[in-house]
Amino acid sequence: MRTNWIYPATAILLSVAVWQFSVWAFAVPAYLLPPPLAVAQRLVEDFTFLSYHSWITTLETLGGFLLSVIIGIPLGILLVWSRTLERAIMPLLVVSQAFPKVAVAPLIIIWFGLGLFPKILIAFSVAFFPIVVSTIAGMRSVDADLNDLARSMQASSLKTFLKIRLPFAMPQIFSGLKVAIAFATVGAVVGEWVGAESGLGYLLLSANANLDTALLFAVLVALMVIGLVLYYAVELAERLMIPWHISIRSDELRASS
Amino acid sequence: MTTDANLVSSVRTEADIQIAGVTQRFGSLLALDTVDLRISAGEFVSVLGPSGCGKSTLMRAVAGLVPPTAGTIHIGADLVRKPHPDVGIVFQKATLLPWRNVRDNITLQLEMRNLPAARFEKRLRQLITLTGLEGFESALPHQLSGGMQQRVALCRALIHDPKIMLMDEPFGALDAMTRETMNLELQRVWLESRKTVMFITHSISEAVFLSDRIVVMSKRPGKIATIIDVDLPRPRSFSMVGEPAFIEATIRIRECFDALGMTE
Ligand SMILES: Nc1ncnc2c1ncn2[C@@H]1O[C@H](COP(=O)(O)OP(=O)(O)OP(=O)(O)O)[C@@H](O)[C@H]1O
Ligand SMILES: [Mg+2]
Image (cartoon, rainbow over all chains, first blue to last red; front, side):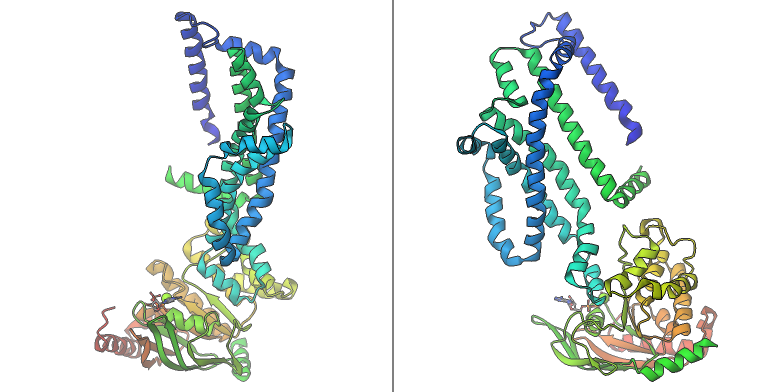
């Protein structure tokens, strides 16, 4: 994995070069497609300004994500623990996921105003479902023999949960977290589109209104950086918390390649 | 030899298994039909039978994991209703925790039972030596071969020094060579400690090699078809497969299988 960065880096550099060349060769007007150099210039000139709005969007994303973790993981555990609860709550969850949450965003803005909190709520509403689902899947993935083994050791259910079931669920929970962090960014930007005074989503809308395409692209780059940084932060947490799983995975990769 | 001392002490504590009239139903399926069996303290008994005849079900009942529909099971003087403290279990899969190294997988048994690790330190080292796991104490399960993983599972089942061992096809997933080695090792471990063992297997030669008695079960409903004594001196070796007693036991099991219409 680590040695493979050369390929994507080359691909990106190449496409940027093609982009720069075609803008120049076909004389594309800047309001349609600015050359990459113009975008880069904009990124440098407006660095503090872009950083401020990026920071707002990052806060909203992180807020929504953390809220999803705090609510989603215990909820998933609870639903595995009690069949009755699962029967009562799971259908509601599925229904809540079946319609586009973007549609509720205006309502949330009306209720909670233009600040950070409504965006955190919207980010939460899209991010928490994958966490619940992956927690449930993870808790269920515990081998039946292992459950029997734990019972034969006369362990309390709390001990079995802490020492066996939860660690076993961690790899799956983390794959849910990786999806959730990406979803949370989308939620935050959508929230900002609907009504905001700051943040990258807000900036996108105003750049769009002014046909300031270079700024638009600069915002996209900022969003990409945020997405990457957050994703790798989750992966770093995974490495620190379940190193055993990473080593098994890389051993398997090595064996199959 | 300490072996004799251990033998005497375990006989005195009477950790036998008494299975009386055990019936197990799963809905309309009759998995076990009035099974009666007594395994004496310090005895090694194998259970042979076709797939689905209820071997695992019987073992899970003895382990106190699934209460039987009817009948009783006693370990010593205790009626089994829930898992008994004096039992160690080994399954076909090693069921090790992938994030714990060899040593910590073995001591999981102690942690779960709230037993002080320090008191079992010496025993832990003995078991590791006995099963040839020295030098692998801090290896993670995925770095071990299947045979090694099963050795760890064996140590984990033995660390709290239970009087009873329940083993459900523990070597079923291993290749033939490793399996023979493991059989030899299990015999050595057993000779040192003389646990009461209920050993489930599909392999006739494995059963004959290891057992004092072999219980043959028939399918649907699961019943004891016959019980065969194996009169071979111990320690046994695989060169004994040619001896009359070994051949006789094997033939009797095969005849029983044929009579039951099983082709194993
Ligand atoms: N929890 C359960 N619920 C329903 N049926 C079960 C359950 N456990 C076992 N059975 C059924 O009981 C029968 C006996 O199963 P068991 O696992 O004891 O067989 P076995 O002799 O161990 O087979 P194998 O050699 O394949 O391991 C099978 O028909 C099985 O499908
Ligand atoms: Mg079985």
